[in-house]
Length: 262
Image 1: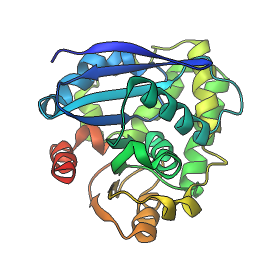
Image 2 (image 1 turned 90 degrees about the horizontal axis):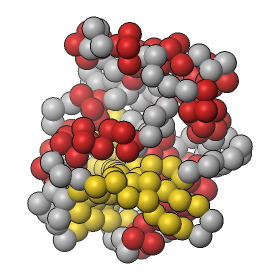
Image 3 (image 1 turned 90 degrees about the vertical axis):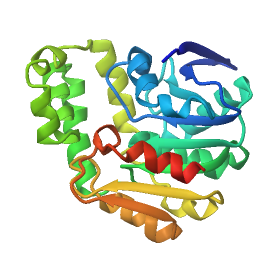
């Protein structure tokens, strides 16, 4: 799948993005936090979502460059909105996964003209006991610059045992991939989720919403998805045997997005 990597030049900041597809409609993806830039996974993402390329022009947005301490999720949403407008995107179908789902909630509430439909995957609208525990562990490891332990804990919380078993030969090498600078950036993103609360803003989201949750989510917990579903009374599906990264693992996940968009 052909793709390109671009940089949105905004007032005071830059934001990288992946672009592929040539359709007349916009499909915007906002992924969760990662130690590495999403642009390094451009080919894998474009290949995974190639079925959207005919009907949609797809953009996958990273976070802004040069983040500072105290950078909030609402600021991330507003920055994404600025980047989208700078490219000329409006009325997009938006898919936010994990922290990307948290950003997407503010994006839809604060900038309704940019979001035509919204899919929230493995996310929450406010912290809970499970999210607090898992995220505090990630923050501690990131602050220690313990790349291997951080990657190991992220992988084993996010993915199913079956998926991890399929990567068992590659994981020891993958887990060593990261720098102290990337850990510091990752820590800022983790800290943004402790005080995050979009629950009372959910009623401001006027576009159609689909929530996709996972019963075995060991990062944020399934209750985060269930709260949003109850509050919005929106379309939903819970993967009974799904883990946090079910958006990467479930064979029918992209079909559910496509069906909802159409």
